[in-house]
Image (cartoon, rainbow, N blue to C red; front, side, top):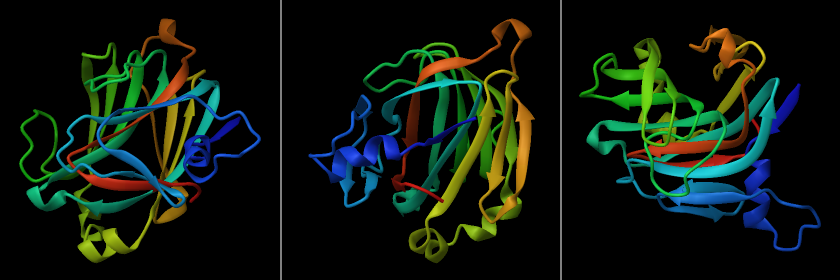
Amino acid sequence: MKRLVLFLLVLGLGVSLFAQVQLPEYHFASGSWTFIGDRLYQNDANARLAKVNIFAPQSGPMLYEFNVRYEGGIEDGHGGFGLHIFVNNVLNRASWGSGSSYLLWLNYDENPITKGIPKGFSAQVYRSYTNSYMELVQSIDLNEYAYLLTYDNCAANTVPVKIWADGNTGEVRVYDPTDPTMNYYFYLYLDKKDLPLKGNWVSLRTNGIQLSFGMGL
């Protein structure tokens, strides 16, 4: 299994100009991204399609790990972030989709306008076909956990993100950040002819929110 500690791939670019390692290609495609210390920040709360593309070859079982912290922007009742995995190609400017890939998305929206998106706290899985076309394939109501989304909790704590995905089978496991022994598992919506999934990029996205990201759990 390949363990992809996502921001090991990019944080070195911000904290050391003299590292004697070959660092991966990355692109701040849209939004306002910057490194501060050992964290990567997306600072524009108005950016709806903020995105950073990171070169990361993926095949077979993959483990994606990083942490996220709320920095602002939820005052309008809407914000979200997610990760495109197994991306075959990317566009280095704002786009709705990210090539052929799957987007795993966490969302808070007090007044959703998209059919199938629950009001409040939820998660979605999108299948991206091109940079301009995606379809919603699964939506999960997470409002039983909404009590955790207080300002004090969000501003004071980093939240661990751990996702296991098998490109050979399409199985995905998203681990519970409050209990690392628990995970929610599902299979991506695809035909057998779509397997195995492979890609050379991951795309990290935010929508209408300021967040920072770091290494480890």
